[in-house]
Length: 122
Image (cartoon, rainbow, N blue to C red; front, side, top):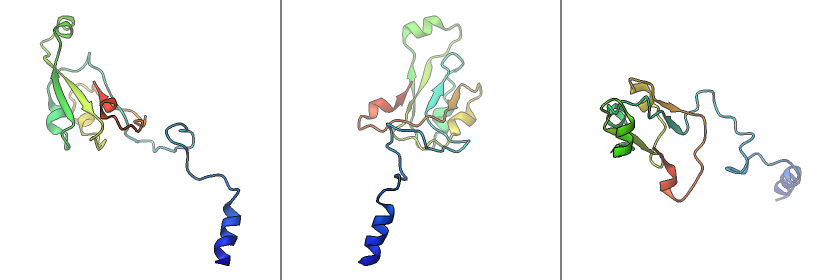
């Protein structure tokens, strides 16, 4: 018991090892190749559905374009990818299989939330 008390006194005034995430992100040392939130360039996307087919956890949904979105495009693209990050394992397969490189995984961390609709990237 005496050793525990001595250890407690040693560490009582030390700075905490952890950070107050998500309010403080300074001190989070992410590796160079960290894979975080997806960014999709919808203008480059051709709607080929490869990302959705190859996703190992099937969190990419191909949704039809609205008539307004179709009118803005010159090609015959009919679908766009929507990423549900609540189930994503951030493996990067979608980024690797995209033939036009319109999907990029940033090093941004998704904010924790109880509302899964906030974890959707369209």
